[in-house]
Length: 214
Ligand code: CO
Image 1: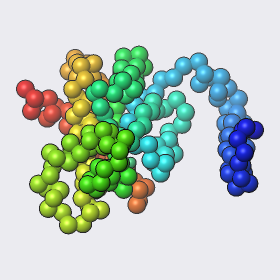
Image 2: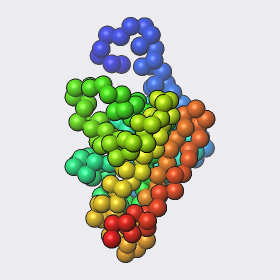
Image 3: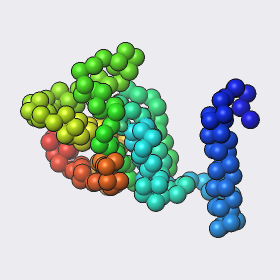
Image 4: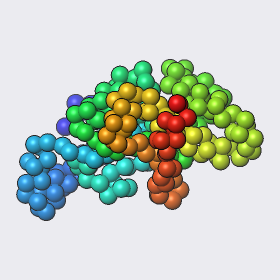
């Protein structure tokens, strides 16, 4: 029981989380008695997922992946910021310790972070984070400025943002070196369309990026 005084509705929601958790754990154990003990020993995920914090993008559910399958980092608008200790630690641990072979940056249409960065409005504390997306916008300003439908403009910026964040990944020494020497990790750009529930692979081309940098 939480110590906080909650109204009836909030208390019910809070309780439901624990009820559903017990049911989930029971169901897993019914199907496989050693499910939790086996997973407790180690993790061997094949994917490192960098996604948006948005509550409407449940990456495990929408890919059918279960516990142990995906190593996850989420932030507002799936940004790979090279001066962010948090994501850098996730990436280094994922690549060097867990030996993950696939790093996915996944954005989504209807992204509140992208829309905010594209709105011209200032948001105080959040602005230094949104500036990272505004930088992406600046690089595509001539094309984006020419779009009259704001939703289409926002969604296109969300897509450019995913590509830009993949390019940021390519600047990280242990990712670039690993790929050039061993062929791994591979970097993938995905966009999730909340209107249809479908993921789209934007086919990020690592070699083309490296060739351009030569
Ligand atoms: Co979002």
